[in-house]
Image (cartoon, rainbow, N blue to C red; front, side, top):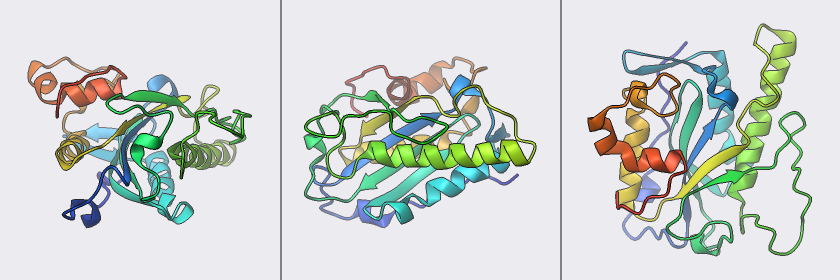
Length: 233
C-alpha cells in the first residue's frame, strides 16, 4: 500500500481574473455502495491505498486524457469514497446555464449508469432532458465509474478481489459548484485534511461526533451529505 495521493493544485485557477462564471469548477464526492471500505485504510491520520484504491486513483488521473476540456485539482481517495475538484474549461458554457444546477443549491445527481455494462440507462437524447450543457460533468463521472467498475469485475474474476453487492458505486454522486476562490481554498483544505479527520467523517461507518470538527467543517459535511446550507464558507 502507498501513502495519500493528493492531486496537484493547478496554478491556473489561482490566476488573477479567473472567471468562475465562465469556467465550471465542481467539488465532487463519489461513494462506494454500502460504504464498504475497500480502497484501503487510514492509519495515524494518513490514507494508505490498497490495490483497489490505486486502481481508482489511476482512472481518476486519466480523466483529462479522455476529456481534454477538464482540469483536475485536488482529490483524495478515502476508504469508502473519494473527493475531487474538477474544472471544466469551456468558456462558452456558463456554470449557471446548467439546467440541473441552480445557483446556491447543492445536490446529489443520479448518473443513470448500469454498473455492469456502463450503459447510460436514461434514454432521453433530445431537448432539455436535464443533462449538463457543454461537456457534461455527469458523463465524466459515468466514464470514471464504468472504467473502475469494469476493472474491478475483471479482478474479481481473475484474482482475489471480493464481489460487490449489485453495484460497485452508489447510484448517486454529489456535486457542488465552486464560485469563488475563498470557497475553493476551503474545499481544498477539507480534501487535504480528510484522512486526519477520518474518525469524525460522516462517511465513516464508525464516525464519532466532535463539536470542534463540526464547527470547522459542518458546512462541507452538510454539502456532502446533501443537506442544503446557505452559510458562507
